[in-house]
Each structure stands twice: as structure tokens, then as C-alpha cells.
Length: 408
Ligand code: NIG
Ligand code: FE
Image 1 (cartoon, rainbow, N blue to C red):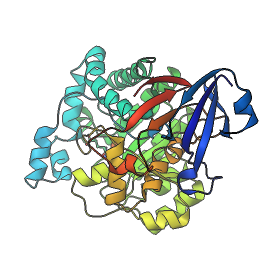
Image 2 (tube, protein in one colour):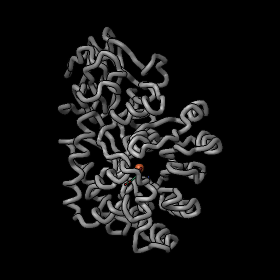
Image 3 (cartoon, protein in one colour):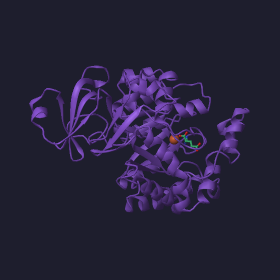
Image 4 (cartoon, protein in one colour):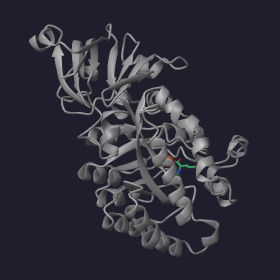
């Protein structure tokens, strides 16, 4: 042990701790290098005998670092005009059919160089980091050519290499199957072949993504096409996940589960068979209430059924230019409570422990437990739920990533 964080109220989110939030009062968090080496009561002999660095947490609540497990934070341009049109009554689907929506972000993203795209994305990742995100998933999906998808993923990689200033880990995901690019209009199967035969192998070779995502939807890719993409992804050693049942039910969650996917995301139109398939496969349900809110959707994901079936519930911002244009995981957690009926404890677990599962990182992140990476946050709050409800001010007092403290 080389550093003790004493006088802490540890919201461990460790399921072995039965108190709400996995809360342990009056604790010492011991760090050795980049790992958590121990959790002790204040009067433990290990604490009394310790002669290294000590930080007094002064009774602050300490949580695991927040994990935003679904974002599209690299993009060019703006979709403000789309939003105006949606507010005036034009649907997301209609805008997409007119060549707006995702395809308008594709045009703007293709037009930017890697350096310009990096510059456009920086304020977004900074905003997430400032409110406690220590690990963020970033998808491609606004390039839709081999070169432009690789460009987006290289930007994601560079964003993750901004440490020590930023100290955020990036989990990159290939989402070439986000929309059918204009040059493949009417030839979607040919584009799927390009994804399977060229884009996935190139991304795997350069290790530019850990997972492959799809938009399985009436306005995007069919389950048969997504099945081909998942098969190619797994053959290249990549994990799979999907945007499924967001606008309609295409049985995408069953498909993701069939491939042993990390997560099925959105899920507003999920049916009972989808819930059962996810429970059986251990696939995480990633709830994205920001997109539900911005699309003024009225169909909610079947949270009670997912909970009853024991499907892990994660919460993410879905930060993207169209359906969820805000860089705040705290706001997403708040929406998960107010709009979807999660408890604040479930929302926080969804942005820590369950989000880690959705990114294949459960062994290393997501709870305060011995052996986990020492990513944790000190919050100036009297109750953990304040992290989720007290919006507009930032109660984050300190941020520790891989054992190293930075400014909040
Ligand atoms: O998660 N559903 C598809 N993808 C994004 C939207 C991206 C966009 O509209 O640019 C989502 O909602
Ligand atoms: Fe998304």
C-alpha cells in the first residue's frame, strides 16, 4: 500500500455489501500503484501502522469512477436544424428518409481532417471528465467508408491518450453499420459486405476497436444483415453490441444475445422474448433516456421486466449530435430515474458496475473492491443520491484515476 484515503464514506457498489449503494461508513481506501489494495475501518491495525501518503476525505462520499458506456462523441457539424424540424413535428424517421439525421452528420464528419475532428470532440470529452467520467465508450459511425471510419477511431484513440491531463480511458467501438451511406443507396447488402470483408478486418488488424455495434432498425440494417456483421466481428475476435428496438421491434436484442453480446442498447420496443434472451445470455441492457427524451418518445423500455429477469441495467448518455446532444452522464442518470423509474442507486450502479459489464471491463472496473483499478471520485454530498439529483452545480471534489489524483 502506498496511499491511504482516510475518513471516507465508501459507496462501493460491491454486491457483497448489503447496505444501499454498498455503503461502508468511516472507511479507509488503500491504494497500491494503480490498484485498490484494501478497504479498512479507520481503527484497523494496517492503518495505524502505515507510514506513507495519507489524504483525509473529510467524510466525503467516494464512488467508483463513472463509466459512460455508450457515446458517439466524435462528430463534425451540428444537427440543430434537425432539432428545430423535430420540434415542429417532423419525425426522426422522416428526417432520416430525407437524407438528414445521421447522414447529415456523415457529410460533416467526412469533411473534417483527423486533427479537426479531434478539436471538435475535445470539449465533449472534457465535459464528461469534469463530472466524473473515468472511462468512456466512443463509437465510429459518421464516416461509413473504410478511411473515414478509421479516421474516427483514430480520433477516439487519441482522446484516450490525453492522459495525464484528462485521465480517461476510451473503449472504442466500430459502428460502420449506423446508416446506409448514400453511395450504397439501394445496395445495402453490398455495404454490409464492405463492412464484413474490409472494414472489420482492418479495424481488428490495427486494434482500433474492441467491439462492433450495429443499428438494427427499420430505417437502418435488417437482422439478417446484422447477423452477418456480428459473425464477421466475432471471427475477427471483436465483441458485439447493438442499437436495438429503439424505434420498432426487429428482435435485435435476441440477435445480440445469440452472439453473446456485451450489451443491447435503447430497448424501448423490447418484447418478452427479448428480455428472456438477454437474461439467458447475460447481456446488459443499456438504457439511453436522453434519446427517449430528445425524440419525445412515449414508449418506455420494459424496466420492471428487465429487473425481474435479472438483466443488468446500465445507463449511458448516448452523447451524439442528433438524438442526445448533451455531454452529461449525471443528467442521463437523472433522466433514468425521472423518466424510466430507476432508483438513484440503480442509476449510479448503472453508470459504474453495470456499465463496466457493458464494456467487458467488469473484472477491472465499476466497484470499489480489492484488486480493482483505483479509479474513484470524491463527492461533496451528504447523500449519494445527490450525485444524481443536484444538477447545475458540480459536487465532484476530486478525481483519482489509476491511483493518481487530479483536479476535479
Ligand atoms: O443512439 N440510433 C442510432 N444512433 C444514435 C443516433 C445517432 C444520430 O442520430 O446521430 C442513437 O440514438
Ligand atoms: Fe447510440
